[in-house]
Image (cartoon, rainbow, N blue to C red):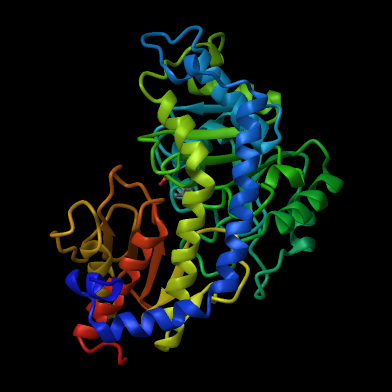
Length: 426
Ligand SMILES: *Cc1c(COP(=O)(O)O)cnc(C)c1O
């Protein structure tokens, strides 16, 4: 059997296969660029591990209090080395990206301080942490105020608005790298660096924090190379390499990370406690794999964009645009198309492929949402996954893929499901 027949045995019509393969041929140069960055970052990771003198003993964990957990402590050195920061907190006790972000925000502000988002709304889940949407236990309840400066219509920073928003209370600035569910472009680390420079010129002691979710390893440098005091992310996205079963990280200055550690555990205990249990090996191995896995996800995103552009849909970012994260938005224009796409992704999964997803209400969303994922780790979005809010303009957000070949199958299956329903012509 050749590859075309193998795809057919999984349900991909030969015409869909041929069409997708034709698009793929036009992406050779893009894929080479991605591989070059992955190679560079692989070497950076190896160097970070060698410089921290990782040894076999570090792959084992501790229990209970977790005192003298040399594996955990050395892993934090590895992250600090990779991000070029003084210190890092990398913990299985950080439940998810939102928890890591909340820890960083609560740790580094005090009553009377103000948080500034200079580049538009922060990620949805931060609205309740900050208290933009009233919520029990929010920063607003602790007397931390909030200000936001919207982006200009062309997605540029509103520098004059930002200058006017910075005041004597401004303590911390939060910048989200990835667009998430917004329609703006994802910011490059360089562009974030320009913003940080502008802000530090006005107020040098303001803490500049970057929500780095989905951005790690996509470029040669991380935002910490451009002046960020802290970068924050989730281990069930890029840096966990698909192997981390839980966790989050915060890398940054010694002071920022220490404040995060005492907030995560307690004053006095800080980084000293927090057993790694059985996670050390997975965290090391996942971090080691992460540049390759991120590259696979990026290839999937670009392939999806190219295929769906050719089918007449608008894709964000476009398939020939520079990328700064792994998320691909595709405007499908109808509920039927969003549902068919998501069902295609699900049908290609290694786990739960026989399940058919349908749109439903979700906490925190103002419309029904359809979600497709058949992952080894629950909710892991470095694994092939897609979600689409059922509202105009009917976007699907597609991300992940632990291997490029699997991402490719997922996209072909999404096309196949739409093709079968007569939603695309090939
Ligand atoms: C995923 C994500 C988060 C939150 O992460 P969870 O792990 O889902 O809590 C925050 N910001 C951005 C940009 C994200 O993509």
